[in-house]
Image (cartoon, helix red, strand yellow):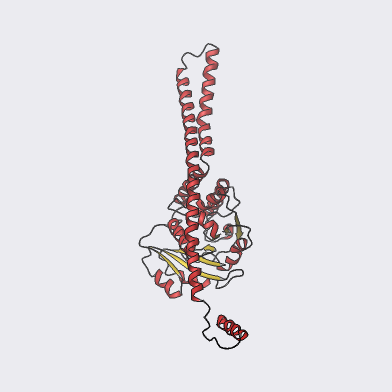
Length: 351
């Protein structure tokens, strides 16, 4: 069982070594632990710090491409290097590395394929009152959109199995945290959550530049993900508003006609018909979007199988290289009895 811990980095030379020093060197149920950083166009000595510390793998971007694309590049790097479990954490040491064992345990036990670390949001001192409430509201919205029970959706401290990582796709350029949960929930990937601890803040958040900017981008991501995975339901809800209002206005006009007072209310008829047409067209857009979503699922399955073939082929090549590197020596001494030859062969094989 191989675990790779990935860390997205952008100008993290001052905090990266602190985070790396806290990472575990061995864990129960894991045979090998490796470390990978995603250098997202850093202008400081982030890469040098990682190399000097002894990080096994480095994914380099020449310019900053954002947290979401860095996260996906990290998953690709981990899968290419044979990771069975991938843990994502932050370079500012926000999350307590001692909780990684707790984070991966549901995957080791076969209970989940994705595990989200739930921070103690209400007890986190450097979170403002408004930020705490927005974190809770955002997590509630993600739970509704994904049909999961994740209490801390914006948490970047998470683990996923190799199988789950091959299913993940992130469309937006802002962050991976919300969209991946919605996608996992809608794709029936087993998602769970475990409580984790946080460390004192080493630097201000670079993702959370402003309350309203964060809220706006998060709402767009949640709505976009919901429309992507449940388009018919979403557009049905949207179409029902003008449709029912238009039907109500139309029924009122017919009632006025029936009692002989319909003349002079043609404007209501026009408005009602317009709203009914808008509602109908919105519903038709939902049907077309549902067909597109079906095609997207087919493309996603195709991509998954291509990924699996590619990554499994790489893993097989790595195993063959390892086997050749440790190939038993051939016995050249043919003297002695058959039992002696077997004993010599056994000794060579153990070398």
